[in-house]
Image (cartoon, rainbow, N blue to C red; front, side, top):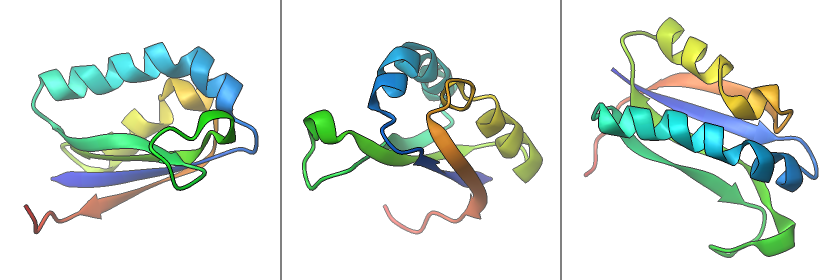
Length: 99
């Protein structure tokens, strides 16, 4: 089943994000290579694809996991959590309708 992982950053997270990004992307790439990821990306703090120093307010990941608990465990192990980027993370079942 698909699950939406919605993470909210702490204030002024940009430096921490930059440091932890390679490890974060490595995990996302593994999901992609397994054909389990639908989409993933950061939420810019301003109305721009490149928010510069404004940074990001969080992340959205939609991916396939065996269960809600498996999705939660995967989210809990994100390098952004260990690095102090995320303030909190919500994991919910997701039903894709389009495309």
